[in-house]
Image 1 (cartoon, rainbow, N blue to C red):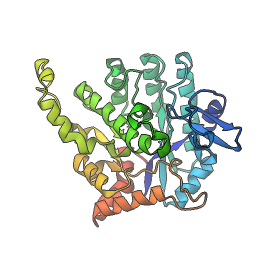
Image 2 (cartoon, protein in one colour):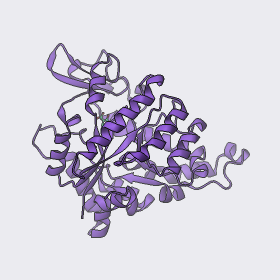
Image 3 (cartoon, rainbow, N blue to C red):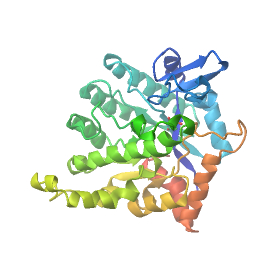
Image 4 (spheres, rainbow, N blue to C red):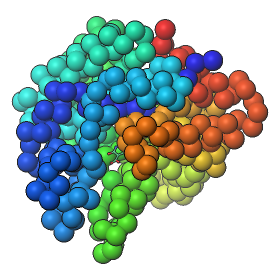
Length: 362
Ligand code: 5CU
């Protein structure tokens, strides 16, 4: 039995240099009242002047870019292989004319990191989504030449208009044709107004626990409603955080579609693929939901053979500091054990077997 972590991020050294050179989100910098601690500011609104500088973003250190730290973390937690991915906000903020070259560089750099890992690492590539669709398609087609790439990671904004944008069709077609799975990951959350006037008192809990999964759920539902999987029946998407809230809300989404007068009038109900069919044929889910209740919903919705273990490293480190075991990781291990209910083959599949099969790991 092998353990494979498919949700584990890095900011490669060149990306860290880029973040250190910036003054607007996303960036890395120190603040005058805490000059010894660099902070990573990536989420929209995270550097609001009303937030004390020491609670802006998160402290950032070598766990985010040093691959020996990733391997040490894997060894500490019994992880055999990891499929690393650039963390959010990927290349979304790069100037359009620079994005193609930036993607080539970062994907080559990540592939090289994997090549030097003695078989421990594979990767999801990043796409130059601020550039024109043809630039993105070109990079998708080039990825086949990078030995360790097993798909791409992207956020919910697509080319700027979301994932139901018809301008994405050539990119979806290229991903489908080249068998490159999409790892769909949130970044933008919800408008900060929904968190209310006391949001600053609650740290990152509301945007991370709720904003991220709801952002993902809305993005995937827009893909469903616009017929992406009716047009691209072989397009595979691995959804972060066990599908946001999709497994729990799929029934409600189906029911709202079935009762919608506007959709009926425009002939959009007949002949469409139901959410349940897509969940079982096109969607994979990570097991990063920290409890068996959410995991059971994911298993019911997509099947245990479509779930894959993840850690979200280097995010959610132990508050006790360096050296301690990661509570976030052990909570996910415990949830998989509980949801598998003693079925060893099911647990082995979620922990690694499914990733080895689906992502064609050696
Ligand atoms: O803690 C966070 O902000 C994050 C993040 O930005 N991205 C992620 O994958 N996990 C946690």
